[in-house]
Length: 177
Image (cartoon, rainbow, N blue to C red; front, side, top):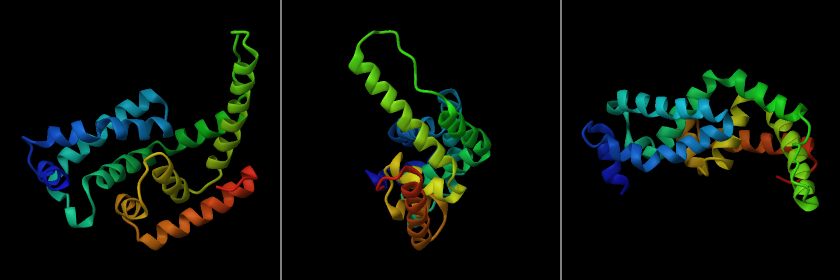
């Protein structure tokens, strides 16, 4: 499917197949990084940018998927301050309140709230490049090669950023990542 999908990138008549194959995945990735309403807008903008730049797509540089993740990640860069503010706000916010009365469910949600707070604070403490690599791997499920293609950096850069990020996250969270 990749070869036919790559051909669909350049062909405006067939570009809808690219959208159909990847929109939901890109929207989920963006929704994990930003508020859902912003994610919807940026997912649509990702495909608009991809459509406009379809003639510059180079399959030898990587597949359609990392190309789209690269566009989406660059769009997130424009919203970077909002993303960092969101992580910091999540880190400061208290555990969620629930009125359902079910003890175990409350304990689970409080535990999850504490985990989200700690993880959000740790992510906010990473550099932009480190955060991009971590979230492309964790949220996007991209390989090192795909992350390198998405960000336009060398594989070694991906590996070193991920290594530094893991060290920082491990230090901040006190767990192995």
